[in-house]
Amino acid sequence: MPLACSALGAEPALAQDAAEPAPTTEAKPEAPAAPDQPTLDARRHFKSGTKLYRDGNYGGALAEFEEAYRLKPGAGSLQNVALSQKGLFRYAEAAATLEQLLAKHGGELSEGERKAVDDALTELKGLVASVKLKIVPETARVLLD
Image (cartoon, rainbow, N blue to C red):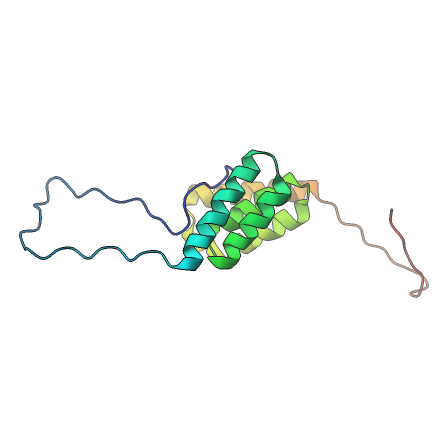
């Protein structure tokens, strides 16, 4: 699954269809609203996280992507949280984050993106094992090292 690099909340500008005539009215089109401060801050954290991730600083990237997601929840930031967790070998957390991504932002994903998330979940679940312990007596302590 590739690192999501699109800016938060930004959509590509669409060129006007050449076959469609230009508007003939003198009225000026409304300018798009300027992004609010949380969006700008989220974009800054997202860009910083992307740079840190590319530099192999997964811990720093994780902090930046988590802050970007806190400020402006979106699929790209949450996907990158999972990628950073995976880079830190925190596979169970990465899988849980991808499940959260599907639950909260599944409708925003294309079919290809959804398949990539499903494939990543399958991979991560194969890297995690579970251990069940039955302790007798129940008051006994178990220490793992």
